[in-house]
Amino acid sequence: MSGGTKPGVVITGISGNLGRMLTRLLHGREHIIGIDRRPFPRRPPDVEVHQLDLRKNKVEDLFRRGRIKAVIHMGILHDPRMSAAEHHAFNVVGTTRILEHCARYGVEKVVVLSSANVYGPSPENSNFITEDAPLMAASRFAGVRDLIEVDMLANAFFWRHPSTQTVVLRPVHIVGPSIKNAPSNYLRLKRPMALAGFDPLVQLIHVEDAARALVEALRPEARGVYNVVGPGVMPLSAIFRELGQQPVPVPHPLARPLLSQMFRWRLAHFPAEELDHVQFPCIVDGGRWEREVGFRPRHGLRDTVRCVLGDAA
Amino acid sequence: MAAALEDMVKAGLRGWTDRMAGTGLEERLRQVSRPENEYGVDPFGFSLDYTLSAVAPLLWMYRHYHRVKVTGIDRVPVGRVLLVSNHSGQLPVDGAMIGVAMLVEGTPPRAVRSMVERWVPTLPWVSTFMARVGQVVGTPDNCKRLLEADEAILVFPEGARGISKPWAKRYQLQEFGMGFLRLALETDTPVVPVGVVGAEEQAPALANLKPLARVLGFPAFPVTPTLLPVPLPSRYHILFGEPLRFTGRPDDDDGVLEQKVATVKGAIRELLERGLAERKSVYL
Image (cartoon, rainbow over all chains, first blue to last red):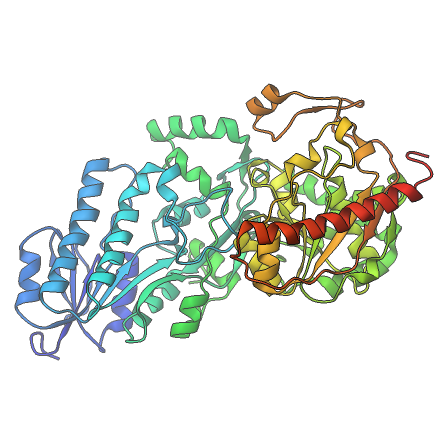
C-alpha cells in the first residue's frame, strides 16, 4: 500500500492511548495519516505520523497533497495544569482549523471525539441524558468551557455542511490499562477521596470499545451527535469494591476547599470541581447510537471496571 | 472499616425484614424487581438487596407505628399508572407508606417509584438511600421514561406547598402543579387518585422558620411538637380511588388542563372526606 495513491484517513491526536488503539484497528484497512505534537514510537511503517501542532499551516499541506476521505479529530487536550489560555487556544483554534480544511478539501466524513462530560454532573440531571439536552457542564466548572466549544463547533459544522457526514461522539468516561485521563487515574488510587454519603451512578467504557466506536463512526449511516455508552451503570462504591480500593469519605463541605489546596500544592491531580463527578450523576442514554449504528460494547461491566488496573486488558 | 460496619447494619436490617415479613416479602420483591446488572442495580440505581434491608424500619412503621389501613388498592391497574396523592406531614412518610402498601398489599405487588424534589440528590446519605430504593429525581424526562416502561409512579402535585403547610391548613389541598397531567396525556397513562389521612397529625407544624430554611437550603423548616424529625404515631388510612383516564393534547391551553387537574383534585378531596368521616381515633 503506497502512501499517496489511496485516499487518506487523518487522525489527530494519534499518539495517545486511544489513537494508538484506533491505529491498530484501522491499520491495513485504511491509509492512516496521523497528526500529533507527541511522537508515536514503534508505529507500523506504513502509518504516516506528522509531529505538528494542529494550528500550523503545514497541516493544510497534508490535505492539499492527496485526497483525504475522512478525518477523525481527537487531538483535544484535557490538562488541568495547563494555562487556561493555552488550553483554550489549542482546542478551539485547532478544531476550527481542522474543520476549515475539511470544508475546503471536500472531506466526506468528519468524526469529532467529544465527551459525555459536556452535559456535566448535576443534582438536577435526568437519569438518562439524551443528545438534545443542553450542555451544562461549564455552569459548574468553567475549566471545561473549551470542550463544550469544540462540541458546538462540530455541531455547527454538521448543519452548515450537509454534504459532509459529520459525527460527534460523546462517550462516557473512557478507561483503560494505560489511559491517563482523570477517571482512570482516580480509580487507580488506593485511597481515593470520596464524598461522605454520596454514591452516584457511573458509566464507563473500555478504551477498546471507544476505539471501535470511532471506527464504526466512519460508516455512512452514522451522522449527527451520539452518546456512546459502555456496558451499563454502576454505583461508584461498587467500582471501589471491585477494584479493592479503600475510599476516604470526606464531608462534602470540607472536601472542596481541601482538594483545591491539595491541587495547588500538587498533592492531588484533580481540580476541586471534578468532585462533582463523585457527587452527582451524569448518566447518558446511548440508545440512538445503538439503534442507528448497531453498536454494542464487547467488554462486559466487570471487565471494563477491572481494566483500569491493567490485568484484565 | 466503614464498609464492614455498613455491611453489618445491612445484614441486621435484612434479618429484621425477614422476621417481620417472612420470605413472602422477598418473593413479592423478586416479582417486582427489574433487570439488574452484576453490581445489583437497575439502570436507575434501584437495588433489590439494598431495598430488602432498607424496607425493615418502614415496614415496622407501617404495621406497628402508623398502623396503616388501606382501602381500594385493587383499583390500581396493571401496567403504567400515575398515583396522585395529597402530601402532608413535614416528613415524606406518606410517600414511604404508599410505597410499602403497594409492595405488601398490591395485587400484583408493585415497586412504586416516586418523583423526588431536585434538592434530594444534594443531600448526603439521603440521596443514596432514595436512589437504591428506586426513587428518582422528578424531571419530566425521568417520569416519561418510566411510564413508557410501564412503571407505577407516585407524584405529589402539591410538592413542598403540601408537605410543609402549617397545622391550620390541614387537609386543605394546596395548588396542584400540572406537569403530571401533561405526562399522563402524553403517555396515555391512567391516574389513580390517592388520599392519605393521618399524615397531617404525625407532625403538626406550629411555625415555619423560613429564614433558617433558606440558610440551610431546605424547602421549609417546620417547628413541630417533637422538635425533632420524628413523626408522632398517628393512624394512617390510605384510600385509593377509581382510575381516571384523560384524553386530549398534552400541549393544550392551561385552562383546559386545569379542568382535568381539578377533576383529580376533586377525587382526592372526596377520598380525604371519606377517610376523615370514617376515622374514629387519630393516635389511639
